[in-house]
Image 1 (cartoon, rainbow, N blue to C red):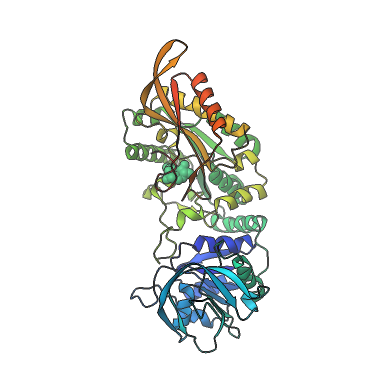
Image 2 (cartoon, rainbow, N blue to C red):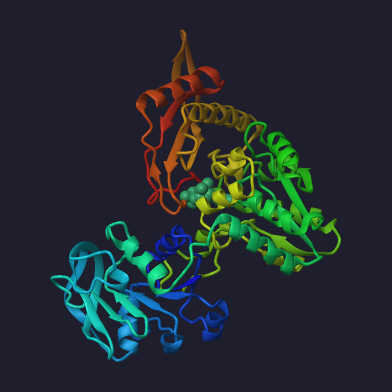
Length: 509
Ligand code: XMP
C-alpha cells in the first residue's frame, strides 16, 4: 500500500485515483498522523501531496521529519517537495515568476521516476515557490525554463520530488512517472483488485463485529446495497436491514426493490411503510431546509423504533463513500470526518450508542460499482443512478401532496424509460424531473389549459462534487417533452435545465 499525506491539495483525490488505477491500494492520511501509525500500516511508499501553503508561512502544514528516515521511499509533489527540501536542509524561495500552466520539462536524468521518458515532455505547473538550494545528497533531475530544479532525487535514500503535478491529465507522462514510483522504486505489486478488497473487507468486518448484531438502513441505492451484501457475507444472520418506505419514492419502487432484494440478495430485511407519517409531517411545508429536516427527523424516529425491537444491537453499518469524508476544500487539515449533513442518514441519535461500520469509506463511486460486480450483484442494482434520501420531496418545489407526487412519479417513470431506451441511463450521473410550483397556459385540441410545468434535469459527473448539464440531442428532448405533455395528466409544459454545478446544485432543493 501507499500512504498519501494530505497537505491540502485540490488534486489529492486524483493522486489516490492514479495509484488505485495501477491496482495498488492507497490511503490518505493527515500531516499530523503519528509515525507509529505509519509503521503499523507498513506502506511500500509515501507520497507527500501538494497544497496551497508556502513552506515559510507560519502555520503551513508539517509532518514529522522522521518520515524521511523510515527507509520507505518518499515522493514529494509541489508543496510536498518543498517540505522535503526544507526539512532536509535545502532552501525554498518565492519564485521570481509564478509558474502556472504548461511547461516544457527537460529531463536530465532518465532513470527512476523518469525511466522510459527521455528528453522533453510537457508538465503542469502551479506554484509560487521553488527550490533554490538542494539538500545534501540530492541532485536535480529535470528543469523547465523558469524552474531550474523541477525534479530532484536522493537515490540512495529513495527520496524524490517533483515541482509539477504528475497526477493531472495535463502532464501526459505523469501516470508513467507515478507508476515508476510505485513499481520500480517502491516495489509495489499490482494486487489491489475489487476481489481482494472484498475478501479483506469481509475478514475485517468479521473481526470487528464478531458475534454481535449489526443493523443497516437499506435505501435501495448502490452504496447501501453493496454495504449490505458485503456485511451479510461477513456476519450473515447477525445483520438486519431496515428498509423504510417514506412515500417519497419513485413509481412502484418499494415493491420493485422488495422483489430484487428478496430474489437476488437473500438479506434479512424489515420493510416498513411509513408513508402516512412522512406525508403528515410534510403537510403545508414549502421551505426546502424544513422539508429536509422533517424527513431526516421522521426517518430517525422510525428507524430507531424499529432498531429498538432488535435486541442487543452493537453496530450500525453505513454506505459512506470516500468523497463524503474528504473535505474537498480542506486547507491542510487532512481528511476530515465531516459528512455533508444532508448526505448521511441524518445523524444517529446519540443515545443509540451504536458503533459505526463503514466498509466503503475509502472507495469512490465507480469502485463501489466494481465491488458490486465482484460480489456478483445484479447489474441493475449496481448501475442505479443516485437518488437522494429525501426522495421526490426535494423535487417537488413547494408543498408535497399526494396529487403532486402522482404527477411527478408519472413524469419520472416516463422520462427514465426513455433515457433507458436510448441508452443514456448509464452515461448520465443522474436524470430526473422536477415539478415546479407554477402553472402556465397551454392549448390542447381546442381547449385552453392552465397546468403544471416540469423541468428535466440530466447531468454528467464523476462524483457529484461538480456536474455538467447533459447535452442531450434536441430531437430526443423534444420526444420526451411530447410524451410527457401527451401522457401525463396535469402537465402542459416541459423545460430543460441547462445549469452546471457549481454554481447550481444537482437537485433543485
Ligand atoms: P447536490 O444537489 O448537492 O447533490 O448537488 C449532490 C448529490 O447528492 C445527492 N443528494 C442527496 N443524497 N441524501 C442523499 O443521500 C440527501 O439528502 C441528498 N441531497 C442531495 C444528489 O442527488 C446528488 O447526487
